Image (cartoon, rainbow, N blue to C red; front, side, top):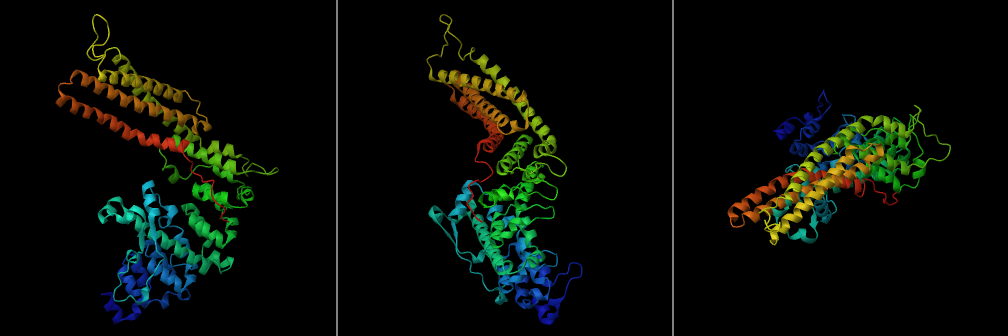
Length: 512
């Protein structure tokens, strides 16, 4: 239908929609009609040049949003200045690319086994087809261009196993990452590098780097700073440079780049338009979307304190530099003021969790203490020794009962320590999380060994009727599995947050 209309009247290609200022090819791209886009593209190349208006830049922006890099790269190779040309929506392609973290490696979270598969995939250098001659067959997809090779064991896996492990999805992901970095380098070295400061400002280049900081795209920040080192000293509307802004947005990957900068001590002394230095910004509350990714108010408070301590270790203020902002507040005062509510919520979260677990631990103590003196089978009336004393399963019962009793006592003591804590700000760093780790760990051990004691006692009394014992033992493992499944992820998260490698990378190599 589109082909018939174009053949009938080619002037339709130049029509502009009044409400949004879109031409037919832009309207098709906006609505994900990429077969139509690929058909119209070679017919409208001349009208997509930057001197003809914002339509070429708009098409590149829509291609970025849809991850259709074939047309975007072809158009940018023909007209590099489109990278810093504003489209109909007022955004330039370089700004749009900085707003899509999923097309960059740093914007994609992978599990350890997914990271291993990702590293084993090798992407061949891109061979972008000439889409300008693809009129008869407009179905050009990114997947058809893939030149991917596997290393190691991945090469012999079947396609079914590829789908099961998500390898095909990881391949697509790495291919998108490779193409986006290729396009970013092309825009920076063919468009941004050769223009003056005013043209960069008009093309939203500096706004793009702050957008990349907010999104946590370190590849964008590093590449742009290497092309234009002055970006390190550029400030946004609030007088904050990229490292100030990374603290404000709580982007630890971007902030870690400061360890690879030569002028780190000089950058750390700068203040924004309100007199806030880097430590003042660390004293402000994190954005809501960052806090929501952390389980529990106590761990959120811990993360905020970790940020404050890390920035404090970085900022070395020379003598004579005031530690007050324009409101006359020190960084620590600002931290206390902004985190008062979060601290109260963290205290409540800790106390509620400790109270609930204390009840469970106390019940376990009562049960296991009583079970130690009412052993299965009873005692010999003459000697007072247990009847099953020489049975192996009886030793399993006694040992598991003792372990459950001692671990539950330890758990209750730890949770009592949480309930009686002073809840100072620094207590959320190590003291309270450590008590919670020990308390949860020993409580899990206590419940597990309690069920082992129950199963061993049952086996002693009904060892001749295994058809009854085995199903009961299987049912007894269900509550243990449920409890561990619910609490173990939280325990792991607390442990990693407290004793893990940390969220900051102080071993960043010198990059500028």
